[in-house]
Image (tube, rainbow, N blue to C red):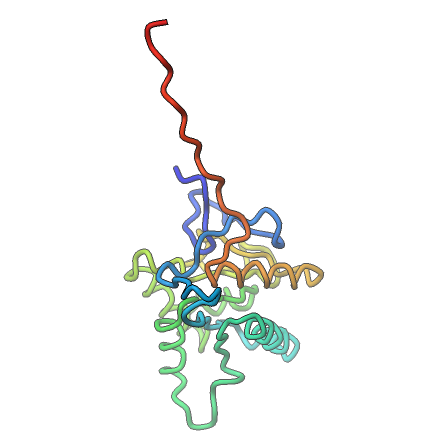
Length: 207
Protein backbone atom coordinates (compact mmCIF):
# COMPACT_ATOMS: atom_id res chain seq x y z
CA UNK A 1 0.00 0.00 0.00
CA UNK A 2 1.27 3.48 -0.84
CA UNK A 3 2.12 5.89 1.97
CA UNK A 4 1.15 8.93 -0.10
CA UNK A 5 -2.17 9.84 -1.67
CA UNK A 6 -2.75 12.33 -4.45
CA UNK A 7 -5.65 14.62 -5.22
CA UNK A 8 -7.98 12.81 -7.60
CA UNK A 9 -6.70 9.38 -6.58
CA UNK A 10 -8.99 6.46 -5.99
CA UNK A 11 -9.65 6.07 -2.27
CA UNK A 12 -9.99 2.47 -1.05
CA UNK A 13 -12.85 3.00 1.39
CA UNK A 14 -16.61 3.27 0.79
CA UNK A 15 -16.83 6.96 1.70
CA UNK A 16 -14.92 9.74 -0.03
CA UNK A 17 -12.22 11.44 2.03
CA UNK A 18 -11.21 15.08 1.93
CA UNK A 19 -8.53 17.67 2.44
CA UNK A 20 -9.45 20.71 4.54
CA UNK A 21 -7.15 23.68 4.08
CA UNK A 22 -3.51 23.48 3.10
CA UNK A 23 -1.97 22.03 6.27
CA UNK A 24 -1.12 18.34 6.34
CA UNK A 25 -1.82 18.03 2.64
CA UNK A 26 0.00 15.12 1.11
CA UNK A 27 0.02 16.17 -2.52
CA UNK A 28 1.87 14.43 -5.28
CA UNK A 29 3.11 15.97 -8.48
CA UNK A 30 0.27 17.11 -10.70
CA UNK A 31 1.74 17.12 -14.19
CA UNK A 32 4.26 14.32 -14.43
CA UNK A 33 5.57 15.59 -17.76
CA UNK A 34 6.13 19.16 -16.55
CA UNK A 35 9.84 19.63 -15.90
CA UNK A 36 11.57 22.77 -14.71
CA UNK A 37 13.35 24.63 -17.46
CA UNK A 38 16.18 25.48 -15.08
CA UNK A 39 14.97 29.05 -14.64
CA UNK A 40 12.66 28.28 -11.74
CA UNK A 41 9.60 28.46 -14.00
CA UNK A 42 7.48 25.70 -15.45
CA UNK A 43 7.80 25.09 -19.16
CA UNK A 44 4.06 25.46 -19.69
CA UNK A 45 1.04 26.69 -17.80
CA UNK A 46 -1.37 24.01 -16.51
CA UNK A 47 -4.87 24.23 -17.97
CA UNK A 48 -7.81 23.61 -15.64
CA UNK A 49 -11.42 23.30 -16.81
CA UNK A 50 -14.10 24.29 -14.29
CA UNK A 51 -17.23 22.15 -14.28
CA UNK A 52 -20.13 23.48 -12.20
CA UNK A 53 -23.89 23.99 -12.15
CA UNK A 54 -25.34 27.44 -12.83
CA UNK A 55 -27.70 27.13 -9.91
CA UNK A 56 -27.71 30.78 -8.79
CA UNK A 57 -26.08 34.10 -9.55
CA UNK A 58 -24.25 33.90 -6.21
CA UNK A 59 -22.80 30.47 -7.00
CA UNK A 60 -21.76 31.53 -10.52
CA UNK A 61 -20.03 34.57 -9.03
CA UNK A 62 -18.17 32.35 -6.54
CA UNK A 63 -16.96 30.09 -9.36
CA UNK A 64 -15.87 33.13 -11.37
CA UNK A 65 -13.94 34.51 -8.38
CA UNK A 66 -12.39 31.08 -7.79
CA UNK A 67 -11.29 30.88 -11.42
CA UNK A 68 -9.80 34.36 -11.15
CA UNK A 69 -7.77 33.29 -8.13
CA UNK A 70 -6.42 30.33 -10.07
CA UNK A 71 -5.40 32.53 -12.99
CA UNK A 72 -3.71 35.00 -10.65
CA UNK A 73 -1.58 32.13 -9.34
CA UNK A 74 -0.48 30.82 -12.72
CA UNK A 75 -3.24 28.38 -13.75
CA UNK A 76 -5.03 28.79 -17.09
CA UNK A 77 -8.55 28.34 -15.69
CA UNK A 78 -11.13 27.77 -18.43
CA UNK A 79 -14.65 28.91 -17.60
CA UNK A 80 -17.76 29.23 -19.73
CA UNK A 81 -18.40 32.72 -18.33
CA UNK A 82 -15.15 33.89 -19.96
CA UNK A 83 -14.56 31.59 -22.91
CA UNK A 84 -18.00 31.24 -24.50
CA UNK A 85 -19.57 33.80 -26.83
CA UNK A 86 -22.94 33.84 -28.63
CA UNK A 87 -22.90 31.33 -31.48
CA UNK A 88 -20.16 29.13 -29.98
CA UNK A 89 -20.51 25.34 -30.01
CA UNK A 90 -21.47 24.39 -26.43
CA UNK A 91 -20.95 20.66 -26.94
CA UNK A 92 -17.47 21.18 -28.39
CA UNK A 93 -16.54 23.57 -25.57
CA UNK A 94 -17.57 21.09 -22.89
CA UNK A 95 -16.00 18.09 -24.61
CA UNK A 96 -12.69 19.85 -25.26
CA UNK A 97 -12.68 21.26 -21.74
CA UNK A 98 -12.94 17.82 -20.19
CA UNK A 99 -10.73 15.91 -22.62
CA UNK A 100 -7.97 18.40 -23.46
CA UNK A 101 -7.36 20.15 -20.14
CA UNK A 102 -4.66 19.02 -17.74
CA UNK A 103 -7.14 19.09 -14.86
CA UNK A 104 -10.91 19.14 -14.50
CA UNK A 105 -12.07 20.82 -11.30
CA UNK A 106 -15.60 19.74 -10.43
CA UNK A 107 -17.38 22.22 -8.14
CA UNK A 108 -19.66 19.88 -6.21
CA UNK A 109 -23.02 20.87 -4.75
CA UNK A 110 -26.23 18.88 -4.18
CA UNK A 111 -27.70 20.36 -7.37
CA UNK A 112 -24.58 19.48 -9.40
CA UNK A 113 -24.70 15.87 -8.20
CA UNK A 114 -28.43 15.58 -8.92
CA UNK A 115 -28.01 16.86 -12.48
CA UNK A 116 -24.87 14.81 -13.15
CA UNK A 117 -26.38 11.58 -11.83
CA UNK A 118 -29.55 12.13 -13.86
CA UNK A 119 -27.66 13.13 -17.05
CA UNK A 120 -29.63 16.38 -16.95
CA UNK A 121 -28.61 19.38 -19.09
CA UNK A 122 -25.08 20.65 -19.56
CA UNK A 123 -23.94 19.26 -16.20
CA UNK A 124 -25.26 15.85 -17.19
CA UNK A 125 -23.41 16.01 -20.51
CA UNK A 126 -20.14 17.06 -18.88
CA UNK A 127 -20.62 14.31 -16.31
CA UNK A 128 -20.98 11.68 -19.01
CA UNK A 129 -17.80 12.91 -20.73
CA UNK A 130 -15.94 12.86 -17.40
CA UNK A 131 -17.18 9.35 -16.59
CA UNK A 132 -16.15 8.13 -20.04
CA UNK A 133 -12.71 9.71 -19.69
CA UNK A 134 -12.19 8.11 -16.27
CA UNK A 135 -13.04 4.75 -17.79
CA UNK A 136 -10.63 5.07 -20.72
CA UNK A 137 -7.73 7.29 -19.66
CA UNK A 138 -6.11 5.09 -17.03
CA UNK A 139 -3.41 6.94 -15.08
CA UNK A 140 -4.57 10.28 -16.48
CA UNK A 141 -7.77 10.00 -14.46
CA UNK A 142 -6.03 11.81 -11.57
CA UNK A 143 -6.85 14.97 -13.50
CA UNK A 144 -10.44 14.91 -12.17
CA UNK A 145 -10.58 16.63 -8.75
CA UNK A 146 -13.84 17.09 -6.82
CA UNK A 147 -14.16 20.39 -4.92
CA UNK A 148 -16.86 20.24 -2.27
CA UNK A 149 -18.56 23.63 -2.21
CA UNK A 150 -21.87 22.88 -0.45
CA UNK A 151 -23.59 20.03 1.34
CA UNK A 152 -21.97 16.75 2.31
CA UNK A 153 -19.80 14.58 0.11
CA UNK A 154 -22.50 11.93 -0.10
CA UNK A 155 -25.10 14.35 -1.44
CA UNK A 156 -22.90 16.69 -3.49
CA UNK A 157 -20.28 14.57 -5.27
CA UNK A 158 -21.60 12.72 -8.35
CA UNK A 159 -21.52 8.93 -8.29
CA UNK A 160 -18.60 8.67 -10.73
CA UNK A 161 -16.36 10.74 -8.41
CA UNK A 162 -17.46 9.50 -4.98
CA UNK A 163 -14.40 7.26 -4.61
CA UNK A 164 -11.97 10.14 -5.18
CA UNK A 165 -10.15 12.36 -2.76
CA UNK A 166 -11.77 15.79 -2.65
CA UNK A 167 -10.93 19.22 -1.29
CA UNK A 168 -13.32 20.91 1.13
CA UNK A 169 -14.21 24.40 -0.13
CA UNK A 170 -17.24 24.86 2.12
CA UNK A 171 -15.40 27.15 4.55
CA UNK A 172 -14.78 30.55 2.98
CA UNK A 173 -12.33 31.45 5.75
CA UNK A 174 -9.98 28.78 4.38
CA UNK A 175 -10.47 29.65 0.71
CA UNK A 176 -7.06 31.28 0.22
CA UNK A 177 -5.08 28.39 1.72
CA UNK A 178 -7.15 25.78 -0.10
CA UNK A 179 -6.69 27.50 -3.46
CA UNK A 180 -2.95 27.84 -2.90
CA UNK A 181 -2.64 24.14 -2.01
CA UNK A 182 -4.60 23.15 -5.10
CA UNK A 183 -2.42 25.35 -7.30
CA UNK A 184 0.76 23.84 -5.89
CA UNK A 185 -0.60 20.40 -6.73
CA UNK A 186 -1.43 21.38 -10.31
CA UNK A 187 1.97 23.02 -10.78
CA UNK A 188 3.85 20.02 -9.44
CA UNK A 189 5.00 21.82 -6.27
CA UNK A 190 3.61 19.69 -3.42
CA UNK A 191 3.28 21.25 0.01
CA UNK A 192 4.51 18.10 1.72
CA UNK A 193 6.53 15.20 0.35
CA UNK A 194 7.67 12.05 2.11
CA UNK A 195 11.12 12.36 3.71
CA UNK A 196 13.87 10.29 2.10
CA UNK A 197 14.27 6.71 3.24
CA UNK A 198 17.54 6.21 5.08
CA UNK A 199 20.04 3.67 3.86
CA UNK A 200 20.62 1.32 6.79
CA UNK A 201 23.93 -0.50 6.90
CA UNK A 202 23.57 -4.29 7.20
CA UNK A 203 24.04 -5.73 10.68
CA UNK A 204 27.46 -7.38 10.99
CA UNK A 205 27.34 -11.14 11.41
CA UNK A 206 29.50 -13.43 13.49
CA UNK A 207 29.06 -11.67 16.82
